[in-house]
Length: 354
Ligand SMILES: [Ca+2]
Ligand SMILES: [Ca+2]
Image (cartoon, rainbow, N blue to C red; front, side):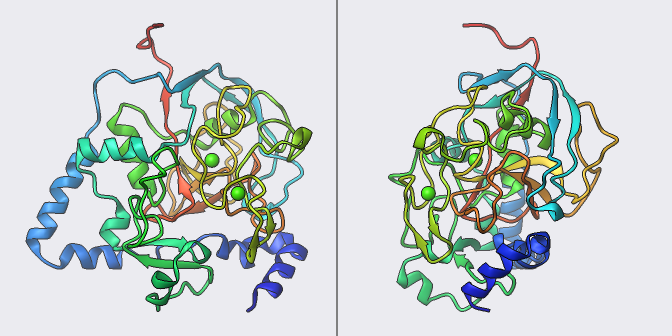
């Protein structure tokens, strides 16, 4: 199906978004098969990887570094919306939620910080184990595109790119030398969880993330209010122009932006919407649990994890998910060029004012 028809369907059939268009907003790994294949290639390799993965999940016990975090005061806030844009995602209903105080990273985790984690722990990401990761096709060089024969049936502009991983975001001929302050990408939920745990932190719950996004502004679309560009200023990195054929780069960024770009919200958090999607701790369900009103943690189990905030690939006519109430999902072993994360931490007596 060509882009024009897909675009029209997305625009008109908003409530069918999940069934038609949402399948193309992201690509998910369809099975453990390729990783299992890699793990079974030889026993020595398997033992080597398993040993390293044991190191990955080791919990860090030294004090948390709060220097790039903010303490959110908690309290009650309104989660979700009664005016859902993408109803099938479970954006509705509005409900009053109580959140305890907690800490959250000011920024999405940068390439620099993820590299330090890898050096410290020898972590091997799932993109490396699988041997491929998903990249939006217009990000690729002609040389890399020409060598890709496999396509994702339900997501035609997402390509499984060999050797795409956090250090080579667009495959073999790319690098991160000028993107050390950009958000790390090609990290699965499992990778993100390992990172946060290694420094004594954790992934935020969906409710914590949304509370942080809203920044004490009830019922607003974005962290700063309802206008996409207040006073004509860009506040986030999304797709400007015509998706997916023409990115006018009005906000200054074709791909990711440095994690400290754009104004902070009232909590001091940056890029909660746009730039990269952010993993949360919760399992996905399109029906939010309404029985959980105090520090909700979502379903007890599931097959996908919730991600929040949208990315540099989001456009209002397609994947209008750069809103605090919006939500989407991927399997916990999926990685792609537009998903990253930030960490949170419990509010304990450990923090000492410098
Ligand atoms: Ca942009
Ligand atoms: Ca973000």
